[in-house]
Amino acid sequence: MGYDPKNPMAGRISDLGPPKYDTFFPPVIKNNFGKWLYHEILQPGVLVHVAESGAKCFTVRCASARLMSIEHIREICDIADKHCEGYLRFTTRNNIEFMVD
Image (cartoon, one colour):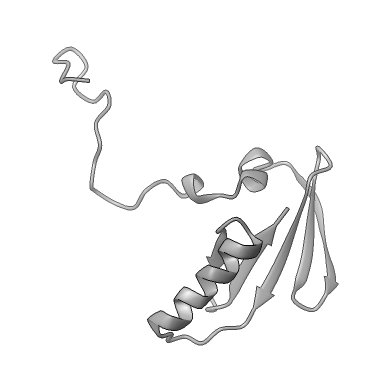
């Protein structure tokens, strides 16, 4: 696609600011965004979120250090690749959440 002088903003890729947050959601979160009925704490560190559609998303929360080595981050990513299709998130309190549907 070339440049269109009638619509200069079409197809424009900007490097200003972070990418939109919802591009990183797991599919179950993306499909049910804003449609969650409730969540339950099954045991400490394990939550289940239930959507209006009946879809469930299990979240496993793990403690982590504030400062981590690259080897530790790679191990965390390997766990996410093996069990969660590569999806994880870091909370504001430096915990790790693995989301599985």
